[in-house]
Image (tube, rainbow, N blue to C red):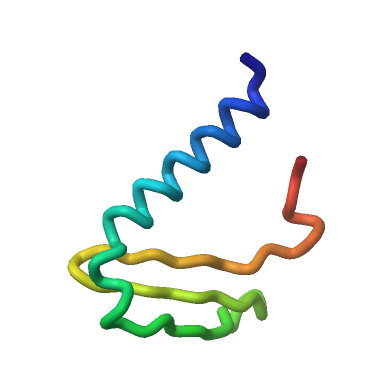
Length: 65
């Protein structure tokens, strides 16, 4: 197996576990949005039942393939 496959599989597995662990709370709570002042990047954050899930925008030059 190559590194790209393992990385993709690991990310997919982690996302699946996070969705499964938080699915029961998703209907009751809202997603907060904001901007990180230091960087100007947007974020989306959801937390409930002791779980925090945060997505942060990445600039094109921060993304590697």
